[in-house]
Image (cartoon, rainbow, N blue to C red; front, side, top):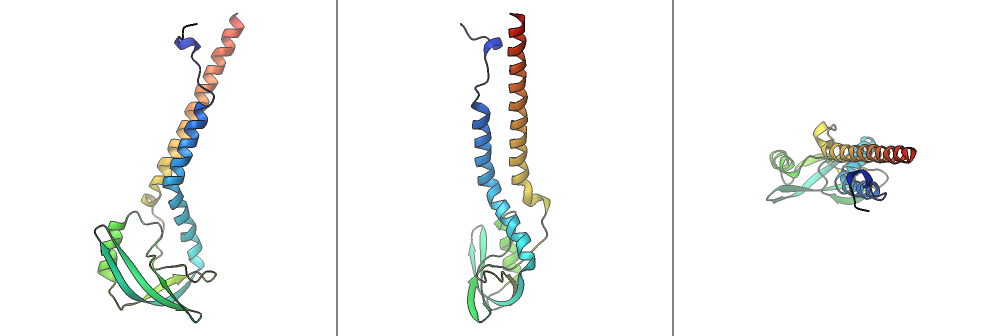
Length: 164
């Protein structure tokens, strides 16, 4: 029988393939964001500790702040400047303007895992969540579209059976 628009049905596996693809996108773009959100909220209870800037490593689009600190008699090094930053270019100018080798700074240290530390904790801003919103919105829209499409096709199929 030739395929006409009236007897072409959605492949039952298509919605699952699209949802799977969108979940992969969510993991790729939203995964680091969710990880950052977790550590941002968890670091609210971390202890403040004095540290010393050891080095600032400048690269074309980023600057990495290396620091050394002592926590409960053990020496540690770290390079995490901030969780949930929208990009490294704004960080680079802020790091170069505020910090110099040998400066004393205050950092936040995880008391359960003292090797985890962060220099700056800023409030979460809406632009930091854009990739999660975009990916989540695309996932929700595709789920809505495919569920509606499948429902419409099933109704057509049932109405044709009733006419026969």
